[in-house]
Picture 1 (cartoon, helix red, strand yellow):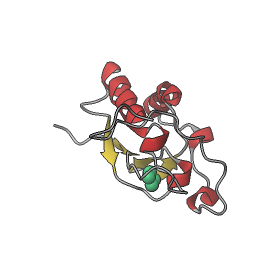
Picture 2 (cartoon, rainbow, N blue to C red):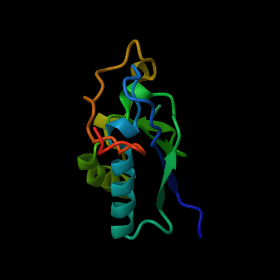
Picture 3 (cartoon, rainbow, N blue to C red):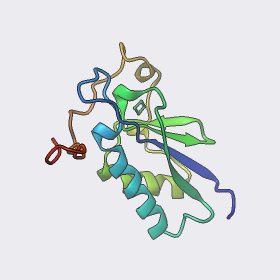
Picture 4 (cartoon, rainbow, N blue to C red):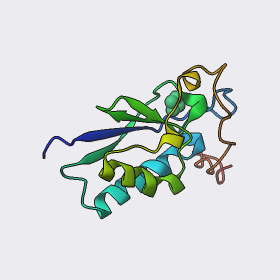
Length: 133
Ligand code: FES
């Protein structure tokens, strides 16, 4: 398999419910990752251009779902499934989706912009409990 030109590291970390800074999985990162994989495959980019990988916490939890774009060295934040086609369009054109690129103040919880509201997706059922919340 060829080395891709870009790697998207999608944080899919999940913290316990109620953690103040939240977590990307709680805000839909698993679904964002799946949608990215599907769109990248659908456009024939998966084998040579870009790979969407899951990652653990990239330390901008309050601005998640977060994606580290490498080797370009920027982060997307507050990404939803609806943003995926635009993100892939930008990859194809060699650009980026500026409205999703995290500015320096988003790298500190105290100065970050507002988080996406919680929860965006239902929590998976825990063993021994009925359904998710
Ligand atoms: S939980 Fe995703 S950046 Fe920390």
